[in-house]
Image 1 (cartoon, rainbow, N blue to C red):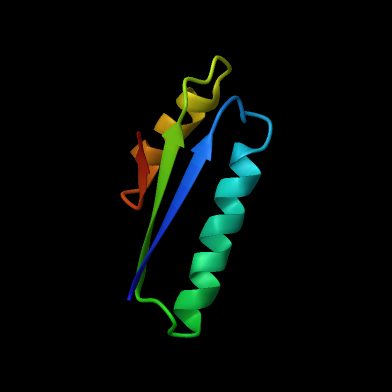
Image 2: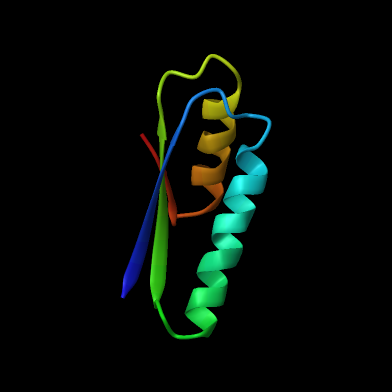
Amino acid sequence: MKLTVVVPLFNEDAVIEDTNRRIIDLAGDLAEKRLINDYEIIYVDDGSTDSSLDILKKFAETSPKIKVL
């Protein structure tokens, strides 16, 4: 089973790195327990005016499991 996590956000640059790490850790735990065999994270930026979108783009560049809309 593949897990898809959709995260809407607006001006969350202060917390997005921690949020991303927590989601990845959770997905890893679920995979270890064989509850999922794959995952993806889809971030939906709602027009942030801070550096949220830049941070998300870096995540997407470093991991094929992360998508940004």
